[in-house]
Amino acid sequence: MGDVVALSAKERELLAEMEAVGRGVGSLAEVARRVGMSYRQVKRVWRRYRAEGVRGLVHRGRGRRSNRGIGEEVRERCLEECRGRLLGYGPTLAAEKLALLGVASVDHETLRRWMVAEGLWSRHRKRKPHRQWRERKAHFGELVQLDGSFFDWFGRGDQPCLMNMVDDATGRTLGRIYGEETTEAAMRVLWAWIERYGVPRALYTDWKNVYLTTRAPTVEEQLADVRPRTVFGRVCERLGIEIIGASSPQAKGRVERSNGVYQDRLPKELQLQGVTTIEEANRLLAESFCAHLNGKFAIEPRDGEDWHRAAPAAAELARIFVTEETRAVQNDWTIRWDNRYFQISGPKERLPRPKAKVIVQRRLDGSVHLLHCDRELEYREIHPEARLASREPQTKATPIRPRQKPLPPPTHPWQRSFSPRSPLIAERRKANAEAARPGQTG
Image 1 (cartoon, rainbow, N blue to C red):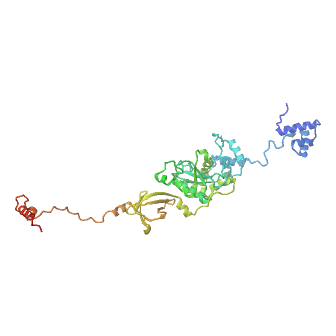
Image 2 (cartoon, rainbow, N blue to C red):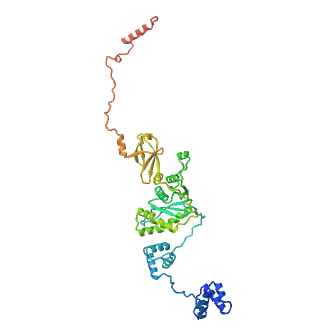
Image 3 (cartoon, rainbow, N blue to C red):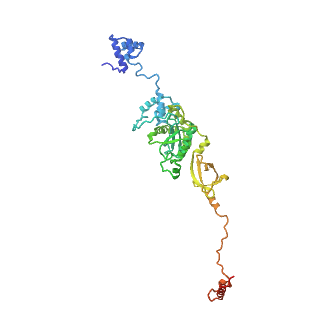
């Protein structure tokens, strides 16, 4: 029995053509037109077929290593890194890091095949229920998605929060890590976005009470005809930013997928760089990491017009990004806020009256400012002990003895008897009778 020769589909087509030419049916020029080859190439194939038969149609490179193939030594170095420092990395990220570390420049698909063969990579996608697709916005800054992602970024077991902002039109991202998803964290990451790109038109968030509230309006809000807002909502209102609440995590899927990219890449980068604190991680995010993600994954918007508004000055932003509470002025021109006491000292010509309302502002830098009628007040902070001591008298007054009931002397008329037989009463009656006689009046 002869040897079995495996032919590809193209080689089987050439075999049929060569057999037809051998039988005298058609010419090599017609074969060249039908199979899409040059006449010279078909002549070479015909010569090999006549000399070697079917085996002459097999490609000469079959079973040989490609001249552009990567050597076994390079493959082993790459797989060694994937088993060591890059353990757990996906093929795409691992290929990037191998190039940055100077190990080798390998295409991510080549590395994927190597890793699958060695059992270092296996990914099975889980299909989720289909939801209605929403088209990207057309302009950069038209809509920015904001979300917090809790994850073990440093590999210590704790889970700080990554505040992530992603532009809907371009996928451009900006992230910062904070301890929790708080109002201050949301304000700080929004401030960073405004400083870099400008003021966006709208924010797309979930219904966490940091961003939106479902409480009933207060009496003051009803009288002013305003809807209830959070502290972050008031900041966005001053900046002219609309907050849109997402009905599901899938509705803001762009920022959710971006969170997954951060969770895959950022912990590995922090480990490679030896970063162990939130401050160092935010420095890395600001200097290089976010820029690298934007350069790799961001796209151009359908419309090139930037819809961001110009960013206010830093001093104006400091007055906007504040938390506010209202307090009443007491009779000694002090107010109490956050268990602290403040003595209002000026300005003298516009000192608020007692019981007047004062707005207490706390800025992101920790400073406290008092406002009355949109004017800033002068004040100094006093300790509760000093305030109580100032209200106590400096010296004790001499106690007042109780008043004694006066006693009349024995010769006082009150000491005499008032009985009807008393001589004094008889004389008084006689005088009154004589005065009442007729003809005695003047």
